[in-house]
Length: 253
Image 1 (cartoon, rainbow, N blue to C red):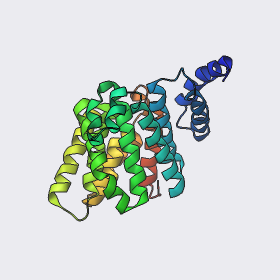
Image 2: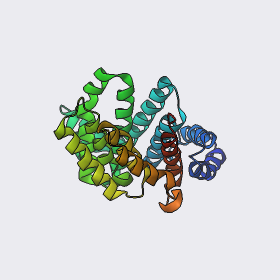
Image 3: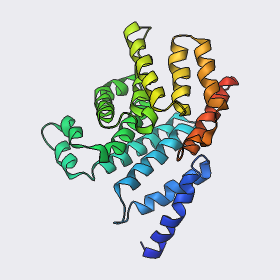
């Protein structure tokens, strides 16, 4: 790749990323970022941003299950590429106990670990119960490591994952429901203004316990909030606010 072409991508992509709540802009970012990631000038953070971009496309702009699976798989793969930038992690996964490799990761690598686990969980869920069960312990181990390193990352992202996970267990097991609520409340303490915490709490936990008042309260917080109050997260807030409004209007988000 010519240096001039790479410089053009490096200048243009921040603007595309800033408009990632728009489908065409996010798609253009992903296309250009793939070129950037072939360059020796790439950084671990570039892999992480690519993982986030693929996740967003799968979560908000994909309709068919097949397309969603493809974007979540891409997200998980790019996030793992970020982790592989750590030589100790590379040695660990090739060693006799690859499941312990995550303990070689520190706060510097935590973002890649979160997106690898979160996207893998989304992909496995879409693949079916058998795949979800096969990857469950691995994903939980990674999310527990994220909580050890930085529980407030992505506004309580690991706690949000566990809130969702325990609420989706079969039946109305009181222990699982208590754990779900505990994790959602921790996520809400980390990110009281992060709309995804409210929408997930309402749409997954609230729906599971059939509590219309809780559902309405938290969906309205997201639907009526100001997306620009969290610096750097306005696009995610806009996308999640649209989802909250659709649910309140009775539409499928």
